[in-house]
Length: 221
Image 1 (cartoon, rainbow, N blue to C red):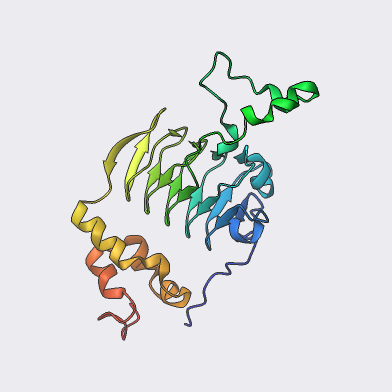
Image 2 (image 1 turned 120 degrees about the horizontal axis):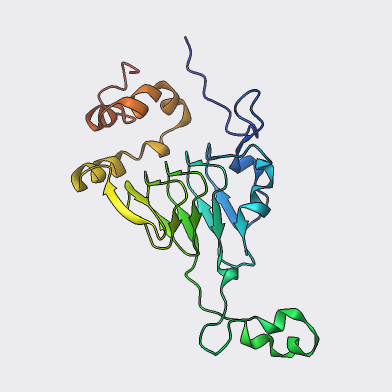
């Protein structure tokens, strides 16, 4: 039977399930990037992801989401536009309210930011997780439901809580290095399709053998 890849351009990849959208064909903002097959699940309106789930996005910082990421219902990204001054007696942003207060716009421009928010490849963000500005989430990481991510997460780290803390790494440092070297998410789509079982349930040895040009190339396993 021929291996036919799934369609990375389908807005709703699961037949009969309008609650699931692929982000790449959905996104229109030049400040948001999403890799192929990263999806968002929401029973209400997943197509409103850009306005309901990416908040205070006044630029120029970007939200970058890798390939093959799973975003549960209610996952939110707070961007740098949410920042307020904290070096004076009040944090209230008077200039945005207009009137003569607008003459003091310099008080709210150039606030310090943490740069782009970056989610690696093959990341699972659980239901209701919140990611704060400028956070970098490593490849293969898992964020528990309801977590508030305030600092960077290492590759293949599992975090949970408010603020989210590292619970454990999914693999040893040596095995993480091997997985990053394999980088299966960068394989050609046809190659991924032929080796879905290995990617989902095989060990690291099997994944290395399945790498394009590897010893399993001829067998198609």
